[in-house]
Image (cartoon, rainbow, N blue to C red; front, side):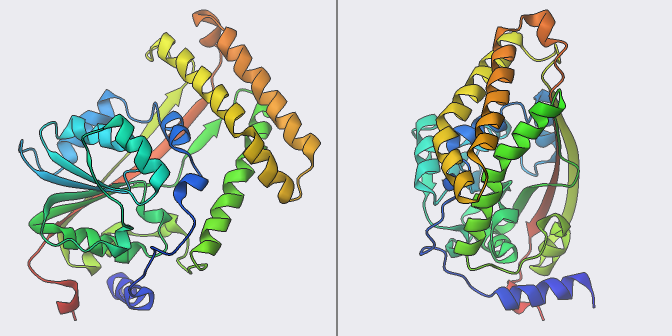
Length: 322
């Protein structure tokens, strides 16, 4: 059985979905501040230049739909790629939408889930950034994006790929990060349960070109790259790195009560949680006190891999494909 036929069967099994009644917003897993801090160094000038080459339209006046805009992190990148575009952001999470509105007070927003989107032929480009793999029915979501663009318009999905890594400078710091990361594991599981435990497989094994072909997008192409940030790298501004360290420590302090509560509920011992926080706070204070020479010897590193899939809408509808 071919991959595209399998994907079409997946679509029929998933069918339509109503997410408006689901209580579990993404901000329960990641706050707007955590998204912004975590991705602060994700795309450098080289990455943005690649985006400008890869993104399919360069006209000044185009209509762009960003789905799952979240805190507005990638919205700023879109403004860089399309400085004169009319960008409309879809974000159903009220907390993330509030953060988005603070960054871009004049931005137009849509507050319904993507799977319930009922726009037709309104946009030149529909783009999602690190969104689709988190949705219970990814193919339905991509079909809604296709539906929202005009004939000849483009659907663009940017997704994580295998190979992301976080390297801490020593074993105790690495273990502390891992202990506190269990909060996100638990909350992600709760979100899956709130969405009805969808049987959607491992998202890292999704083939987005197959998805795109299954809903009759054409001219499909893929690009990818690694984003590498190393805390010691002198190419990054020293003051900016120091401000980022401070923001990260403050974020851990703000999240400590809620994280501790969830980890205790999971059965983790309080001493283990407190010990992890102490290790990380000591580490952060060391970073905050470090001068430029000292920071050049602290090699915490974040490596992220991204895949961008681009397809163009043809004249046929999905239900015409047999």
